[in-house]
Image (tube, rainbow, N blue to C red; front, top):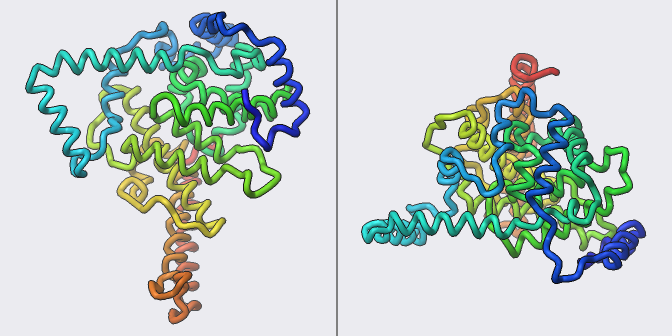
Length: 383
């Protein structure tokens, strides 16, 4: 496993890599059983009493490779095909319609099975953080509890009912790794943090060139952008790059498009809210980073962003996310008004009345504070 320039001088990481190389299994030996590790995770969860009241616990008890009809319906909602209104999307949909006209229903079923098999094949080996013994199944359970109690309340990115350790382990080893790595900072074994983050960076690089695009991958890159290890040199910083990757994946998955379907089950509803939440988070990251670093924003306001409060039904848990989105829209509007001269190299408009523009947006901020103070007092979960 290669070491990045920012990690090569870290003594803990160097020592750990030496241990890995000296104890590496021969290439002929098979990868440790992924199913066995899943059993350990589930056993640790049951021993900790984590599944007693979880209404979604049955999603964790699926054996490896099992698929449910509900899961199939959920996957159909996030097609990575371009929009049918776009030229490439039109051609893709016409091609699919043509295949169906030639008895493609059977072929599409076979292709779906092949897709699932290939998807599972790309994830047969467990995450390196478990594979090399950096954490155990018992550690994972504790690290996820740390995440829910100390981290998720600040970024509101995951749903505890659907993002269980076993579910994330099966779907996205990269996301599994970064959650454990970030949580290890607050763990009583905090010495594993630098090595865990090294594994997370390695997973970020490998996942970029291999595997499939799905929502959990986008969430993993969002975590990397927020909790990336501070770099010694500005040229080594990757936070803005990880943000761009998350946005690109979310756009490829069409998360920016409003969903017209109505969920029929709780799991489908939670999945839809999960996708909306991810897109709002991508917008917030893009706008806040662009504002702080003076870079152009990569996401324009769309229907989901303009109606964030209405899109996120469970407002008491996502209220700070929606409030931050509204604040960023005000800040962006102020910047657009100030940099509104198309003939200026920087865009700065020197002909506007800066006092009037500033007072106008100050009034908007005052109204914003009053409105969202009321939201927080009446609709937030204060526990």
